[in-house]
Structures are given as structure tokens and as C-alpha cells.
Length: 243
Length: 243
Image 1 (cartoon, rainbow over the protein chains, first blue to last red):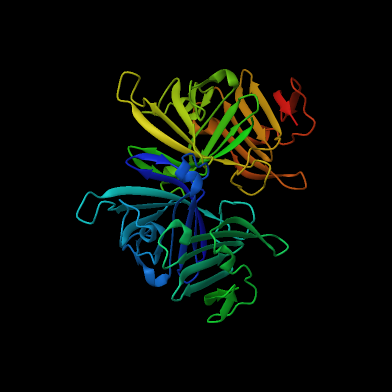
Image 2: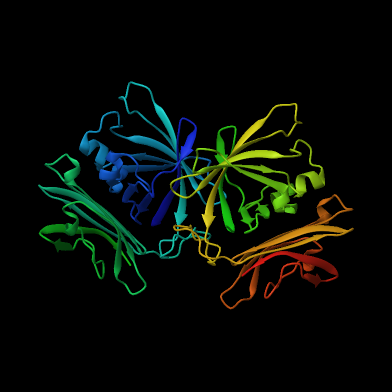
């Protein structure tokens, strides 16, 4: 089921907080993308690069396993295809699979619990909790989901050529994208996009970051699976299209 | 500022969860009321009485103190006027003032941290955290507030006669009420109401509990402060009316 999740809290070492406006998009076929911009960057570094993190993957880059005997709990093992910490080689950040357990509460919110190994696989684990609020992706407001989702548009485009890796996920009225220039490895090689479809069908840009952000697809009408969409010289492949 | 807060998480002993659809109403003048119905009651007791808790107070029943040097933090000491645990004399529940600290995060959510003394003032303290999401009370959907609130209707009615204690708070399109029959002291003496104003001005009932629930006011047009509203024999006083 396509989903749009807003992170409500991020807890490490028993200290919950939320400094970002994080939305995670999950497509109908299980592709995923999370953009985590800071709400109020305070440091010079934060002002120059106002993102906590961003990552993306296809359904081949995640393993979802039901937990036997539990209706509300599922294991999700992420092996990010694009991880900007790995791309930037940020010191003391996790590499490789992240094992998590997701528990859906009676209220509809979802608790994600896991551990990362920022100092290496054989070093100290750091447990974390993230709390997610499902959002009605068919609405322009950030509406808390009260009943199970209606049918949602779910479209995914991917590029993976000699120069670029990128993923764009459309869920309902919300679009998110990450595009990285393979050879760069610095913040200059990063591009992010968050769009929102207005009632007249046009798209409003909420986040547009990076010198190659004009190379993101920004129209999503009548796309068919396996079609190739050319945008400013980049060839994006439609890997999922459900209207 | 009037506010409508949805509880997102309740954490005791490091174990966050949310089994209720809790909304707390805060009026412009600082009167407050919190209704905490269970979303999916499972036990026979929960099915018979599907509420975790409910309480209410006027601005005389709370002390709000800014914390010096902190922009985002405020102390709130609650001394509930109506507390259904006290009314029902539920064993191992707190009595008297509850001291809490409220921290507004960059994301707009608010963390409330405090301690209760369910086994008595001189016994073990139980620390708790509640996480609150401000909701746009002018909307019919549960819309996450992204910018500071616009003007909100804020109306409060109170009754405190020989038979009944009750408070009703209207914030924007959302109404909540508690009414207790003083002499009873059992669940039969409890009445709760949650209404939502539709776009045509009518009110939809979301919660209506208790044999005296017909005695709640359900129209809130053109009320003036200090006016008395008679409803099914009860005389409610308008203690606040801002349109």
C-alpha cells in the first residue's frame, strides 16, 4: 500500500526530539525514499546544508518480514541504494543493512525501533526509535490518517546511468526525489526535490536543492511502466505507475 | 492562544505507546479539558468504559510559568478541577498538583514531561512523557499545524451547582465537554462529549457518553460572557466567549 509518513519524533539515548520536517514516501511496489530537511538550521553547517539525512531504495533494497504471531509488527531490513551519508563519506555514520522493527499502535502511528553501528559493525550499537504519523497523501494539508487509505497514485522513476543515480516517488499528491552525481562525492553532487500537487494539477515546489535539480521529472501524467522520460538530458525509467 | 492538541505518544518507563484518540482543548483564557477515549478497547472493562482518562480545569486550576532563559520551554502545574480518577477513586492514581515541563520542538510538536505519584506523595514517583501534535482547530480534518494559528473561536461554558460540575470548551470547530454528577462517584455519574462543526455550521457528534449527555450545550452561536444558557434543566455559565 502506498504511504506517506511524517516523522514525529527521533529518539536516541532516551532523548526524543524532532528538528526536521521528514517525510518518507513508500510506493505500492515497496520502493522508498526519505527526505529529512532541518526546520530551523542554527549552525553555519546547517544553514549551508539544511538536511539531517536523505536516502532511497527500490524494493530490492529492503527486506520486509512479518513477525509470526503478531498482527501489528513487521521487520524491515534496509540496505539503502542511495544514502547521502555513505555518498559523502560522513565519519561515524552507519554502513550496510539497518535492521528495524515496526509496530503499529492503536492510534495509527508507527514506532520504528532499530540499532545502527556508526563506529563500525564490531563496535558499540546505538539503539534508536523513530515515530511515524501516516499522512493522507491525497490531501494538500498534512492530514492525519484516521481510516485506511483510499486509492493512491503511486509512481516511481529511476535513473542509474554512468553519471547519475536517482529515484523519484509520487504518492498521491506528494512527490519526493533524490538525484546524485556519481563522480562527485561532495554536497555539490546532491539534489533533492519535494513537490506537492495543487487542486488544479500543477506542482508547487516545497524543496528544490542542488545544481542538477532541474533534471528531476516534474510531470507525472499518463506515465506507463518501463517508459523512459527524458528530462534535461537525463533518461528516467518509469519503474512503477499505478493511477 | 486557543489550541487543540492531539496526543501522539504516552511514555512510561521508557515504553512509548498510544492507545487513545486523545484531544486536549486549551481556551484563549487558559481553561483546559482533555478527553482520552481508547481507540480499540480489548478488555471487558475497556469495552464497557472505553476511556483512559479525562480531566478539566479553569485557568485557576493551572499555573503556567516561563522558564528563564528558555524560549521553547514552560512549566505547567496542573491542579485538576475535574479528574475522573479522583471522582471514581481509582486506586493507585495520582491526587493533587501535577508538575510538568513543556518543550516545543523545531517541528512544532510539544513534549510534556512530568512525574506522578500514584502510590502517594511520599512514595515512588513515576516519570512520564506525553508528545503532543498541535492540530488546526479550524479544519474538519486532523490537520497538522504548519504555521502559527489563525484566529480561533474560543468559548467556554461551566456549571458548578449543587448537583453537577461540568466544563465545555469550544476551540475553532472542535468542542469537548465533561459533566459529572457530584453525588454519584461511579461511572454512571460521568458524561463526555466531543463534537465537530461541519462546514454548514451543524455539529457532528464524535463522542457522546453518559446518561446526562443530553444536558451538554450543543449550540455556540452568539454567546456572551457571563450569560447563562439553560440546557435540559442545567444552567451553564459562559465564562469565555471570543469569536
